Image (cartoon, rainbow, N blue to C red; front, side, top):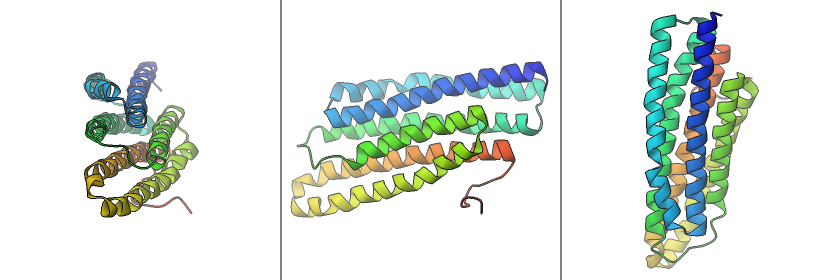
Length: 220
């Protein structure tokens, strides 16, 4: 490998990790805002997306420069292509955290509903998936990426359970419809965050092994 290419790839990984850490922190903060009924914390998440957006632009520029100046090949080329896609996924995670914060702000105007067991667990799993997917990218570790894909099924099941639990609540008390819909929307946003972590994991598997696992199950 040309030393300059490795140097640029290392810098790219470092910036992606910074961006991933910010995205993960946004998810953690907005979950705390919901659980603790903290409107100020939700507002902080809404205003905290600017740094992620700035990194999104910077990382795209780094990728374009690396491709134009050094023309990497094989696994290095796949690493840059993966970085472009991961960058987009992380930016979307930041946007989704803001969407959750907006729903939390609305929800806080209502009396709290039943315990929020499933939603905090979804958020914890989504954060872990993001962290593991990025670790898999840095370490080029397919097994860790595959574990992220497997965890996504748990998040999907929890999202469905949130709706199942809230439907009878809404039927029994019309005044709970609006806050229930906000909780269902929050669960949907968290499920989408987990999907973006899954996208990153799929990109890692392609980067390392040149195997496209999108729309496919685990290897037999």
